[in-house]
Image 1: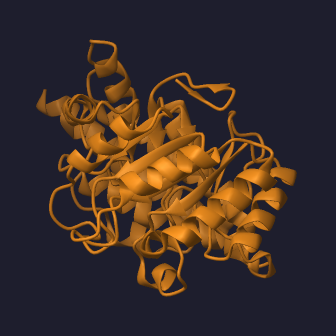
Image 2: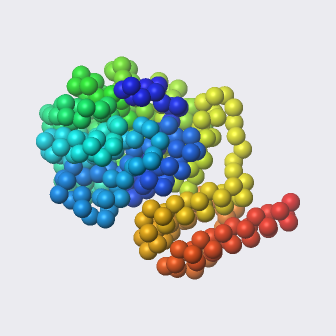
Image 3: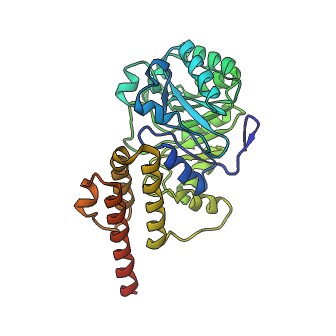
Length: 327
């Protein structure tokens, strides 16, 4: 599978998620088998790039190739300028956000709100493709609402303009994340274009990944929320794609993964912000693993990186010991 001239090691992608897919998490998911991992969406308004949030989102040095930056906005010239500037900073692929359902994004006529205005979408895609000088991809939903599923029309114009690949989440903007993702529209998109298509939405197991690929004919799968607290889902899906399987990680391996993730967060953000960001990841790791149980309150309230790391390590070491004694 290729995006532009980049040959992907696998047909697996980490979905860009605001507040989640920072550099430490992207690097972790790449180690676990994701072939590509785009940044959190970066605003196209370069006047806002001097905030702490934007500065961290613009960091992708030393990441495995291809390095992908997702941009969001609703003004064609600003989107084109943002693409140029991100390429200058080292982006090798530019991804355009047509999928974010968040109100604060849609209220600014960006994200999935753009799907209501196909001429504007065409203008944005055309200007970004012309300006970027690198492959440009597009992530979108099936439409604004269930009465206006226009992903096929947008996919066709995207291919005509020169978009290199598509990712389609099987919900409309009105659905947010409610109900089950539907793959019929994704299948229709795949049948209407010749460029690579990733299917996205509710892919939370190897079996679901295989089913989504079979139902849609898509070239690859994109995994988002299911990777929160479970980055090893990529190696599980990768094994399934090759006709094999891998055992879930032991608690001892989960401990290694969590501790290294915490250390990467502290290094990337600094102690104060790193500790805050780590709390949600700790919650995800443990929420999805009943055997881990409830985290000590101190682990979620401390402001010290050393203490958070020590408490997390000791807590998981205790669980590993309990499991060994039970066996």
